[in-house]
Length: 85
Image 1 (cartoon, helix red, strand yellow):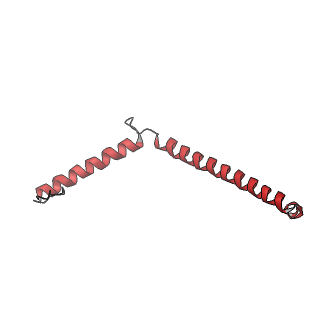
Image 2: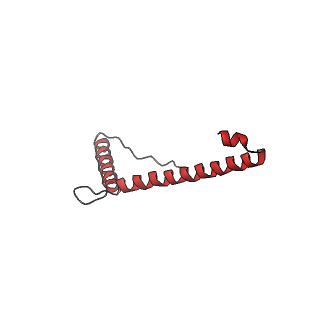
Image 3: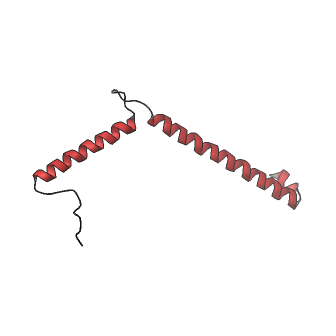
């Protein structure tokens, strides 16, 4: 910081812009690395050979089918009714 105080105004501004650019690039790299890590962890396979995301989607579909069946047996419906008119 002492060196920056010794710079003239033009050089200090240029130095500040350079540091800002370096920090922005570093942040962008960190974001990409974090996204890559998330994708790599999502691509792990379950015991039956499916990806974790696909297994989750299938599980949620099965749960929804079960709920729909329970509601229809109780004379209700989860489906939206169409409006006439």
